[in-house]
Length: 290
Length: 85
Image 1 (cartoon, rainbow over the protein chains, first blue to last red):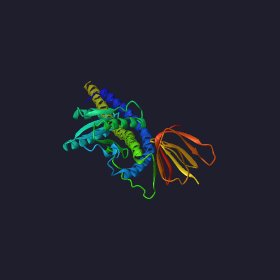
Image 2 (image 1 turned 45 degrees about the horizontal axis):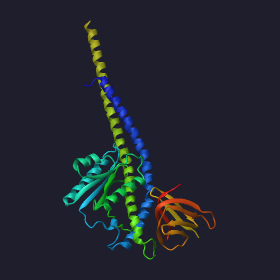
Image 3 (image 1 turned 30 degrees about the horizontal axis):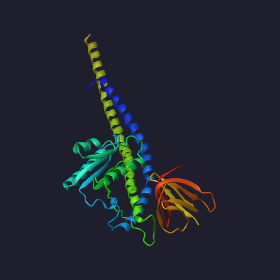
Image 4 (image 1 turned 30 degrees about the vertical axis):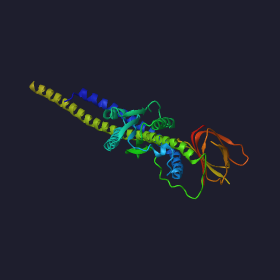
């Protein structure tokens, strides 16, 4: 049985932990609102770009001399998995879910006889992936140096990926990133990044659109931008997911700490009562003996 | 008699308004867009977009970097990578 002093110490320690988790929860809630607003604000650009892409792609589709980013290298032997993890922990199972998804994809590809390499964004995925694929990490991008990763970071990542693609380092790239559904659920989702899949947007028939410069040239410039937008979207989703997961995890932690405090307080009161009772019995027994 | 003009960056929707005319710095030269312009698409080079709120008014300049301009039935949409101010 723990002594009264020990119990008091534990209660105080759990109380201060609870204060920390509560503060972290409130910070995450505030940041989540901001991250969600940012994700919302980025939507018009992404949807417009997809529209333009769709109408252009249907025009150029079917031609063999389309841009490299669209038609691919012609083989699908070497796969690159771009895994977007968070930089900080304390966000529940978010990162382990992402890593799990990445490993499932990697295993499926390897079973099909392909080679798999990783490109890691964010700090938290590095260690667990390195454990399973010590030589599989081609490169990575550190987003922890900036407070909120923005379009510049996305652009840097996309340019590095495209440079690797043009240098012939891989044939197909997939993006594995969390998709924010709500504060409770964030699902890791895999999407093909390179070669750019033709978006299934129907072009509005009828009107003849003039292009300046030619359609191919516009598409050539548009594709890298499209990849950047995909990465940017993933970064925004990651931000929202991280805060959402963190909020939920910290809410649970705060509640658990509360339960633990209640339990410890009951134990503390019981042992205090027991100590008083034994003391009384001793005094009474002593008085009777006289 | 007005053109619907939208300026969008990856981070946000910068402008969405009815204007008289917009002059866009296209890669192959500047072009002005009025209401009822034929469907058209062009890449945009770094420079400033001039927005004329009404006929004859002084233009408002918005500096943009890289992007696309698309003219469709819904008006003019400029997708820019960076917008100043």
